[in-house]
Image: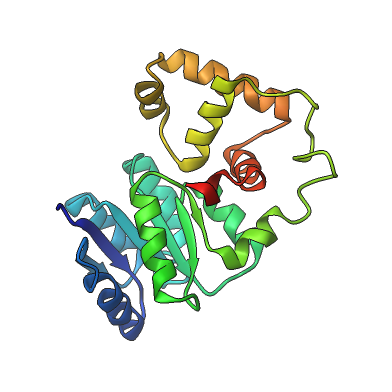
Length: 216
């Protein structure tokens, strides 16, 4: 069985060692590199191309948010899992906009980190259950996602939105659904228009409301 290759980016040595212990005790995972700042994390990601990069948000030199934005431009298909103590939903929204695939709290159980790594490695979006309600809270008006036009999605439009919420790239969605990239883009645009969505974070919110991310 091929092991998932993980890179850790965390400025506190004790925390980093603890994370390595949690990951390395899993038979299907291994830590292949460590860095103590965002710039080091970017360099390791480019060199090692890990399955998942686990990154702290608050670091010297270059924080996790900026590092995530930079990495997603350099390596669009990289999977980044953010690890932080912040529970404010605004942090989650910023990180999802930056391209992060998941968000786990440092104070959560070790099993939560392992579960998050597995989900993110599989191309899915993962939010720590402790912050999910905050992200969803206030986003509905009793009829669904805010701004909804009341129109229903076709099966194919829903399929495309699910894959987008999970973090798949357009070309990956096209391959999985066996349709053209242009058709994927059309379904996505139509679905977003119907549901009053403006960005990927709106799609993730909708996915949370529908229970898609919890079901997978």
